[in-house]
Amino acid sequence: MSGSPRFRFESAPDLPGADAASKYGFGAIRRVVNRLWDVSVEGVEHVPLDGPALITPNHLSFCDSVFVPASLPRRVWAIGKGEYMDDWKTKHLFPALGMIPVDRSGGDAAQVALDTAARVLDGGHLFMIYPEGTRSRSGNLHKGRTGAARLSIRCDAPIVPVGHIGTVDVQPPDQFVMKPRLPVTVRFGAPMRAEDHGDPSDPRVLRIFTDAVMFEIARLSEQRYVDTYAGKETEAAQAATTPTAPDRATGPATAPTRPAEADRSPLTPPARPAISVPAGR
Image 1: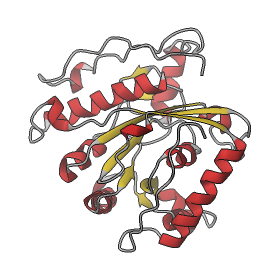
Image 2: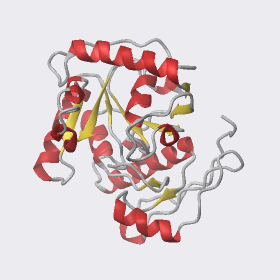
Image 3: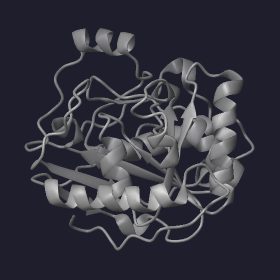
């Protein structure tokens, strides 16, 4: 795995997950990834080696939850969908590795998961959350939920945006087997904080900060940004009207669009111009 530093395990017996299972489980995952895939890790120096930080990747495939943690220099905890607790294959393994299940219907159940995530960050550790809330099946990068921004402000922890390329080729949606010997790139961006986008106590800054994080993820992942939340129904509608994304090998990513009028606050900045990421990786 090129570009990935030596892994340092952090013991945390008072937090979700079993120390022994996490230590040996993540070690095994990193060895398997190194042997079976050609993974390039870029910008890992942006990940703090001490203290709390939120890791916020784009989400295209189940194996995103393999390649991103395997590219980190530290142990990480993560939000995972509550449905994993209904499957005998995952209900014990994933929580032992530090997964915090979340009820995606929202409400009090989701708040319990966020409170647990805050404990991880307050303890000075890394926490991974997918800001889109679910996998994108269109290949586009979708509008971010504000949960990561809320945690960042609440716990005074920076957000490290992450964009990866190649994971959906390794494991397309709804396929169980991960195809070996394929290239994957994981890119970490510079840490971001809410105060760089306004007063963190102003609720409008939650959306501005979240949009800024998503724009950076779009740059890192070379995805087209669409101003709708991820979900099967919305993505099916987009598939009928959205042109095919440009070939990464021949053109830069499309610039993120402006937020929809209903979501734009007076503080929302205009869309950023397109930023080309070198191709050919």
